[in-house]
Amino acid sequence: MSLATAGAGSAAHPRGIRVNLGQFTLQTVQVFFVGLVIGMERAVLPTVARDFGVARGAFLLLASFVLSFGLVKGTLNLVAGGLADRFGRKPVLLAGWLAAIPIPLLIYFAPNWWWIVAANALLGVNQGFAWTMTVTSQIDLAGNHQRGLAVGVNEAIGYIAVGLAGLGAAYLAHRLGARSALLLFGLVTIVLALTTLVRVRDTLAWVHEEHAELHGTRLAGESPSLAETFLRISFRDRAGSALCQGGVVNKIADTLVWVMFPLYFKAHGAGLVEIGWLTGVYAVIWGLSQLWTGHLADRIGRKRPVVAGFFLLSGGIALTALGQGEGLWLPAAAIMGVGMALLYPNLIAAMSDRAPPLIRGKALGTYRYWRDTGYAIGALLLGSIAQFSHAALPAIWTTAALVAGSGVWIALVVVDSGGFGS
Image 1 (cartoon, rainbow, N blue to C red):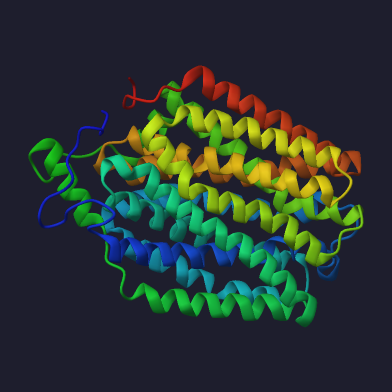
Image 2 (cartoon, rainbow, N blue to C red):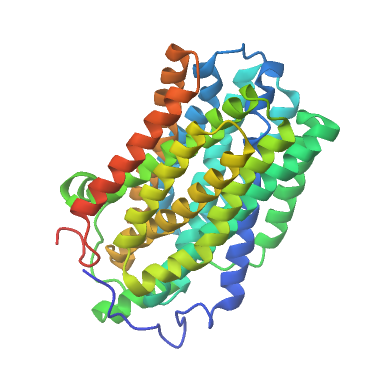
């Protein structure tokens, strides 16, 4: 059912960003730290992979660290949704941060690339639990008319952090070396995150209040199981399937930026700091733009921003393939960032719109499962294309085509209102 007509919450746990500003801000701080952890790797690891034993041209082996991340994160997004609906959001968030502790240590002491693959499996646990819980909690706290804004703020701050971390870690690596830079950056970030987590409240009480408003009782019967919710959204609901495939494809595009773009830029003479700027501009503009793109979709609907975002993203990727220097690469990165900002938070908000409150965690977990499994699919697909063509460029053009096709699919299938099965 559509939740557009639901109220703003009870006196005990009123919903709305302003009335819950303290907790909403703490969740925003949490997602900033989550973004720092994943962002610190982006510009650094692909360009220094040979230091960990990855031979030149071994694109599939290089991409394996994103494969392990995507498989773990995708699966745990799904698990996190079920756990969060049952036990609460904060315990899952804590588990995500505890899993992050070994990551910088594994990178620092790594004798070979397989330790990096293992570190990124743990990064998948961290991101699957921690980022999923921050966005779910902020949706819980926000009013129904603010979901796009809540997701936009979450993703904005997270991806601003990704961009800043990529650039900051690149500068540190230039001065200290990759291992020392990632060890220092990672441990400081994790300690700060755990310190601020103490003041975070669980938002499951807000969910129960919202359900009571809609149904007149706090817990009216059993909610659908995780398996039922997963099958319904993934395969039985046309719009749900379209949103899930959109999530897969946008992460294939992000895999391109994470793995192939640094190699492509390096092959054309860019240094580590330049690569940090190019990938950082994409992430920061993606992040900053989400401060308005989520709210825009609250006012005009989700579909138009999402479809426009896919086409802009595809165009930016194509422009990168055509360019031979920063004169085109920087504008292309900016275009890609705006495209991601239009589609990314609004895919999540569209899924949230379609989910009753008691299965919100499961519904968002299902979408985020498919979305982040896109990292694994992207690593295999783009790594294989680059491996057999001995170059990154064919992988770039393939991604541009996939992204455009995904936008067409959503344009043909998705509408802006209605619940699952409508």
